[in-house]
Length: 216
Image 1 (cartoon, rainbow, N blue to C red):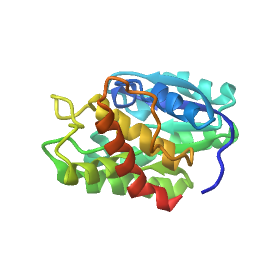
Image 2: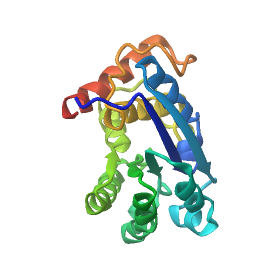
Image 3: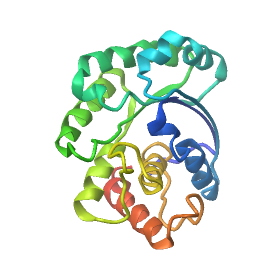
């Protein structure tokens, strides 16, 4: 596994799928246990697409002036299913500005809504396609959810609205980010999501590592 720098600066751009349970802070806490300092910024708006963020201007300005190592893009959750071409256009809007700023594009692949699990394939294909085109890092959280849900009834990942993540869902996302983006092993980390039962955290850590650890 390639070694991660000891200090990283990450910009997250997205909506409540990133903001709920504060994914950036959770990732930061977990990385610190492994000796990696993450400084993070979150630009979030409820239900926002990447195009909404681009048009607002704040995200582009922050990319240009922030000196980030990574810029994480999270598209509106149903757009990859409804209009993957539009999603690809939205990601392309950011691609060149991220490159010019000396940062790396990271795509946060989200998950299918609870009542339509079959849409995960379209979500996965949409993220992987534009990721390959731009040479971006795809963090396949949606695939981790799909695998976990196929093998575990608990802890529950979807909140009651069948869309947003529970704390366990966000914790799984953080584990996948830790493995795929930061090249760190989450197994045994006793930090972050302190209100989750220890056994739930251990299960999530081990499942994420089992799925993605060997790929790093």
